[in-house]
Length: 635
Image 1 (tube, rainbow, N blue to C red):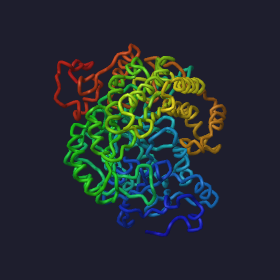
Image 2 (cartoon, rainbow, N blue to C red):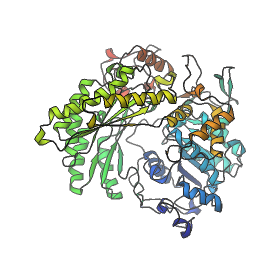
Image 3 (spheres, helix red, strand yellow):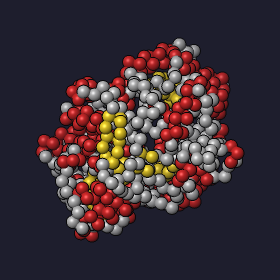
């Protein structure tokens, strides 16, 4: 490896210098002379968060399998190094080569959550890349964004050359070949962006125009040149078994958020919770072959030395071969003293039996996600979980030796009442009571602990709740206070601990989630005034954000609390995520009628995802139970 970009003197001054030195186990080093395209893959947050992101690991592995491409990693410098780099004019660098990011051909930025938007500007700024895409020269890297937040790219449209909509394994080879062809032909940056805009799944904001009505809503959104598509279709991996997956993930030097092997067992979710964006974006459910997973589990554990393996998906209980896979891992991992982590399990008898096997000695906490305190509201959000099932799961867990339960709820859901909020406290109390009724006094290891946590509901694009008004900060805090008060009234209050989320950050996240292009000037203004690491409580500056909105003449309530009509044009309507807007409208109306919609395996609801011709849509089912599409065919 070349000389480090940071001197020993600087590294000794900053927290966790191992964040910046690279050279970790399994990191990829290539000879520059043999490389045609250099790609800097960035996660705009601190190293420990970025290194835990599976998507980066997959794309890093894929791009480095291309002989003509060298992909390196970039993360946001923490505030201490950020200050030093500005003072000493040290350009942002990639970990593997320690070369300045500005020297690369591409800067790819994964946009995982809305509160990292100012960190994206930090990355560009420290790299010496103009913040505004229109100001970049041919010598600047092509800045491309992807990830779940790219499904509403408009608040960031001014800062990116391209957005990749969908799963990254399908189009990068074609995009890179197009880049090489344009360079060989002597084409300009604009020429490349024009060609890239015609590739499936690629959105080039500079080739689109937006106009507004007098009330601030969108009038038209349209391409400005012939041949540029009016609708961007998401990219989807139809076969998640025969595709890219890292056998040798990079092993960090320091402890990171998820310091373990991550095995993605499936993509998508059959459940259809109406608040959940991921459940819509990643439709249809596609399972990885169990033999492939067994093979990769063995290889990844061997190649990393990790002592834990996590099975990753939106709903692991729904993986059809879970029992077989867990049985194999139990046999394999027990010999090597490797722990098995099973997040995203539904709390039922099967899941508890599985967890009993993998947590035979250490009984860590169990997590339930009722999301709402009352059955009425759980029906509204289509959670598909009854109080009876929750309590039965708790009883079985307590019989199995667990005494600590985490409960996740949301406040501010559509149609929520005071009775629904009090239901959070009452359900928590019932679960605590179930422990004392189930476990004999002589077998208790102290009292049980119920940790009830509430986040604040934020309407997201491409969900049935994208039309819902969001609560104000004051309403959110009133709801949290009512929840806390109700918990203190319960008989088992000493066994219940209550946590709630930051209200100011939730309001801002709501603006970014459903924002349009005009929000970009607020993001830029807030960054110029010192906002950075907005997802971190100790660095979040809400007062500066409020000032920035006022200075830019934008009303926060327009993006959060405003009522939206069913025929309003949304900033993200030019993107097709595979789920039709008509289906989302139908689900919104069913929510208002408190009607539950069956999951994908019980009954196809005609959401539109069958057009990809893969996954759960093509599993065998009783066609008489299926909903027909608008065109009249069974989906």
